[in-house]
Length: 245
Image (cartoon, rainbow, N blue to C red; front, side):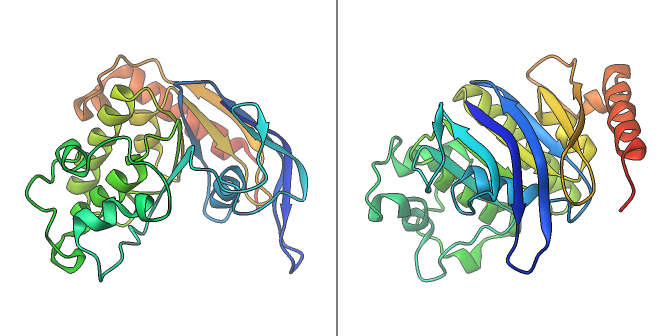
């Protein structure tokens, strides 16, 4: 579903963000990419989304080379980026105003993210976690086959982060979405993913992977399980064995 082959991205100022990055995500798979700040994780997602063309290599989604943004790829960023002059329901329905078809009614999307009754609210009236759930509903409004998540929980407090992470896990499994998450939070990656890929410091490339051997649905109580601790240790070992910036 997602095929990144020997991708490099160099910015106009000469900064090499990615170098020979290669990864693949199978249909219906949830993959997390963990790496230090500045390793090019967000740059990779922008390349997959068609927002930043690679300077080398090729990105394919559903077998086709990515040359421009596609409605078949949804994006969820750390900043919810809600339009303050639109109510919650209108923010969720924004893709429809841009010409896309909503695959799910707005009221159903509000229920999906547990925000029933907030359709008429303004963004300023929401907590950080609620605003991020609105952004998630908007990203899912067209039911894109591919969902890219760019550290979407990084600005939230610990309890809200755990609750929203669990909600994302449930929603993506129900919808059989193909997901790629980039994060620097190892526990979050293990909780959500089927596989965790570890990226090197900039320029980013994949150092290795860890298969997560935990049943679904997952619960945060699983952090105490030996399998969770083992996966965390394996990810840390890859990070520590990688080259130093």
